[in-house]
Image (cartoon, rainbow, N blue to C red; front, top):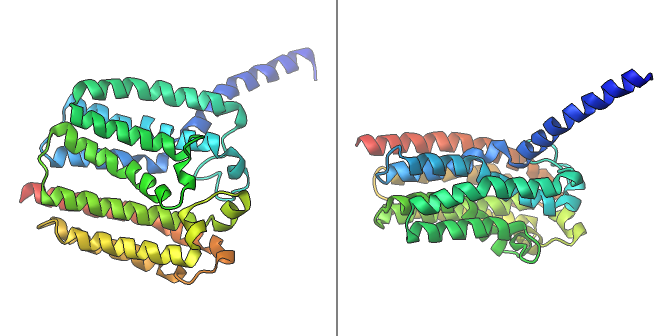
Length: 304
């Protein structure tokens, strides 16, 4: 290769490096999951009487991207070694974050989160700020060294569920919505659903986690018992929704597809835990259908 050709090749590589880093950061934020945190906040804010205000816009954008970069980016940095051995990584379920980008990822998560958090504190109240503090703490504590709630059986499911329920609670607090039976039932049902989902998601990694010395609710209970516990939690979420009032109680039926989807794995032996991945893939698509149905219920409730 001539000197001119080498120069052009070096220039091309230099131009590709920032784009490659951006792609990795984007992948680390899990675009497929953005809606799972932005939607609960936006819907709860609007459903509780808030309008399309500056607080709603700032909160929705925050929970759409920066919040997810913090949540999953921190996880990808500190789970790097186990992610290298995880065959699920590399697609929509997460990237294997290049070691050279770990510091950049933590910096990007900090830089993108701080301005939004300052704005949301300024726009909110002591109550909404307290919820926001708990939400961000749960995100960091799940993966950060020294805390690693994700490795504490039971606490892992509770913390993971907090990641998705707290944006909705923050939306209610930001509006200053009064406590109602409907809101309490909806949040509790959502929390139980989140615990069930996290627990079932951990089943497919029982073998890999045990080999790596990582604890989880699934390594503690075993694959089959964890699936059954998830089924019970889904059913409990549905029962709680019966107290939500009309038409919110119609959402009770939305837990049925989740129970049916994971039921085939209720006797899954630990050594075949990877087979639960098929159920996890269905779970990702079920969320889209469920989100659509919840939206229709919210519209119905608003027009009633």
